[in-house]
Length: 163
Image (tube, rainbow, N blue to C red; front, side, top):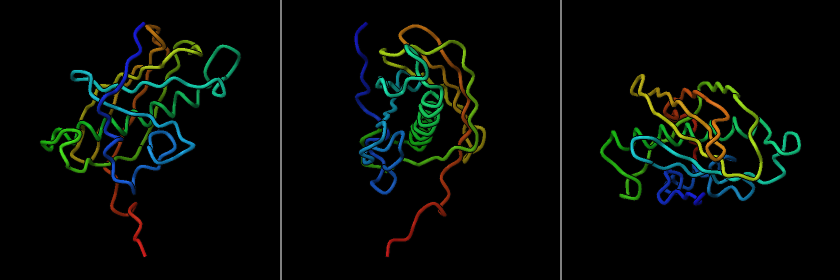
């Protein structure tokens, strides 16, 4: 299998103040550095977990899968609203940020270690400030989990005053 890469990811253009998330923050030196981009009309995040994310020998810990789906959801909603607003990654505009309102993950099969995980999302707007992302998680071609994340545009109260 040819290794997939995300050339343009929404997380690459988040302002520095919002680039610290453990899952997808490019500035968090200890984080996963998840990156989400477009693949046609779907969104995609690819991640190859290290062995330290083992649940039992040979399989990935479920909490990592939930984390991946969470950050894939926030990135997907950001991509979709950014595009709806007439923008694309790298055009100089600041993308919107989202926070998770709810996360539901269904584990279908044990997720094997040592293969890239691919989250594929379908984005649904349910209100101008509330979005839903339906995600399927694959290890190679094996569908291992499905998730639904409901997200809201990050409230201004999340922005800390500098001083």
